[in-house]
Image (cartoon, rainbow, N blue to C red; front, side):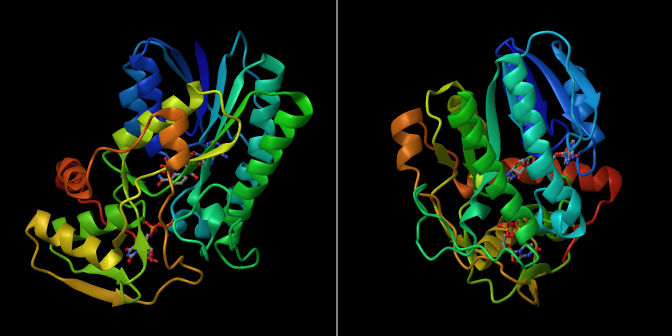
Length: 319
Ligand code: NAD
Ligand code: UDP
């Protein structure tokens, strides 16, 4: 197959590109590098079957030759990034998704949207099944990401219903692992990088809010299976084991051997109080569930950040 994958220089896009290359497929990676990393690209460009287009997908993209799959991962994804880039985030979720659906339609390709658990907002149903419509503040600061992704899901379903396009929607829950930027700003990269510098970890609020963290290899396997599945309905792809952020901080301190503790900062506006996927649908339709525990995943991730911090001195990025 020949795949167009937007956001290929990003964290998830680089891992998913590698997964397609591993199985002998060709990948055209597309990225404007707004939050991507040149190191991720360099790693992919060494691989046979990978080519790169530097392009902002909020403007139309023309690709020559056959295309079998379009996977739309381009979007700022860390709250620090999308709060800094509100208009770009709205554009890539709306115009970018429209452009990539148009490309898939023209080529007769299957389309996969990287959606998010954020479409559930600050959920009033817990854990979150795909049938839950969510509790999103459209006017709040996070609305730029959440509403763009909700629009992206709506236009994806419209292309499926109106044009008969083969579409897949992955609702991705907090994923972490090697090849995240040290300054990405999300909690796991922040905590590990701070611990490696011997700094206290920046705990927002009292740390009682929860997330359910999925190691990247598990996530990529779920996404790969979803792309090859037969369902047009959205599917939660995440790890259903839930932790408080305080528990995460304690685990990072333990595994890095840091004694610096935590320092508290205000909880960001509209920060969801709980989040945990119901993955019944993924289990039934994809035969998939995560296998890597949080401790194992952190143990695989810490050496990557240790090397990056040692070579570049990179710092965390806090709100
Ligand atoms: P990331 O920031 O590492 O990667 C995003 C990539 O998209 C970057 O390389 C960036 O340069 C690129 N990009 C952004 N706007 C673009 C544009 N207009 N044109 C071309 N390229 C553009 O983030 P990530 O964690 O890899 O997330 C990838 C996708 O998965 C996003 O769509 C995100 O919403 C979704 N997602 C990720 C998570 C997670 O936990 N990692 C959770 C939910 C959803
Ligand atoms: N968080 C934190 N310290 C940080 C970064 C994040 O305590 O340095 C908290 C944040 O308030 C949220 C959780 O960790 O409750 C996950 O935040 P992240 O930015 O990773 O992603 P989100 O799930 O909010 O999109």
